[in-house]
Image (spheres, rainbow, N blue to C red):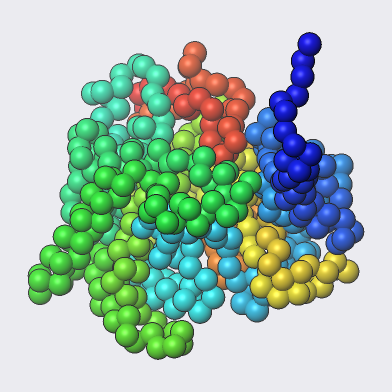
Length: 499
C-alpha cells in the first residue's frame, strides 16, 4: 500500500507552504489584464499562453483577434503583452506618442545578447536617438548610389552560379541567396570582397551560420523565471556562439583599424561611423550628445549590419521568390516590365531600378502576405489612455503584423497574392497603419531603402534570364515554427528563359 514519507507536521507544513508560494508566484501576474478590462486566453501557471503559441504558431494571434477583438492580452511566461491590432491605436503608439511614451522596444537580460546589447535595435531613449541620427545618413540616396555598383556586381556573380552549380535541380533558396546578402553587406560596410557566393565554406560564412544558431531556450527560461536573468549575467552566458562572436568582433576591429590607418578614404558604412566617433567620456552624467558613436557602439552597429542584414534580406528574398513561383502570371508580368526597362545585356541604373513600379508592387505584396518579422513591440514608459483604454507604465505592447496584413476589413481577398493592389491606380484604399513590413514611425527599420535596393537588384538579374518554379520539394503552404521561421527550407527550381 502506498504511504507518504514520514515527516514531522512542521516539515509537511513548510513543504505545503513552499508549494503554495511557488504556485502563487506562477500565477501572480495573471490578473493584469482583468484589471485593465481586457480579455484574452487563459494563461497557464508559469508558462502563460506560450504553449498555445507553440502549438498554433501564427494562427494563435489570428484566433485571439477573432475571439477577443482588436485588443487582447497574452502572457509570455509571467510577462504580460498587450496585443493591439487596431490601426487607430497603432497610429498613436507607433507614431504620435513614439518619442514621449512608446520610444523603446522590449529588452530583457540584454547582456546575454552579446554584441547586440549596444545595437540600435536594443538601446533606449536618448541613446537610441543619438545612434539613430548618427547612422541614418548611411542610407541616403547619395550613399546608396555609391554602393550600387557593388550590389550589381554581386548580383551578377550570384546569377552565374545558377547554371554552373544548380542546373535543373531544386535549390534551398535561403542558402542560395544568403551568400549574396552577406557579400553585399560586407562590401558595403567594410569595402572588402568576401566572395562567399562562390566559396560558401569561407570562414566568414561558416561563422555566420554558427551565429544564426541562436540558443532560444534561455529566453523562455527568463520569461518563466525572470530572476534567472541575473544568473545568466553572473556566469557570462550568451545566446550566441562565443567563438563566432569573437571571430566577427576581431574581424570588424581589424577593418576599423585599417580604415583609420588608410588615409586614402573610404565611402562605406564603417567609415561614416568612424568619422562620427566620440569618446565615452563625452557622455557625462547620462546627458547624451546629439550625434556620435563610441567604440563599442561602432562595433555593435557594424555587427548588426552584417548579421541582421544577412538574415532578414535573405529571408525576405526567399519569400518573394516563393510567391512568384506560386503565381506564374505575376512573375510573367514582372519579367515583361524588366525586359522593357532592361533589355538583355543592358546596364541597370539606380534610378531606373528604383522606379520599377510592378517590382515595387510584388515586393510589397509578398511582404504583406509573409512579413519577415510577424510581430513587433514597444514598451509603454508612462501611464497613458488611448481610445478609452488605460495602459500602465511598463506595459509591453505587441503588434501582430500578420493579423493586420490579412484582415479582410483592410484588404480585399487578403489570402490572394495580388501585387496590383499596391499600384497607384488600383482603387484599393490601403490603410497606412494596417501595413508595416519594416515597422512604422520613428523606430522603423533604418536600413529599409538599402534592403529594397539589394532585393530589387538580384530579382531583376535572376528574372532576366530565369524562371522560378515550384518543384517536388516545394512545401505548400508554408508552415512556421514557434519563432516564426519556416519549419522546412523553401525549395524552388530555376530554369533558363526562352527569349
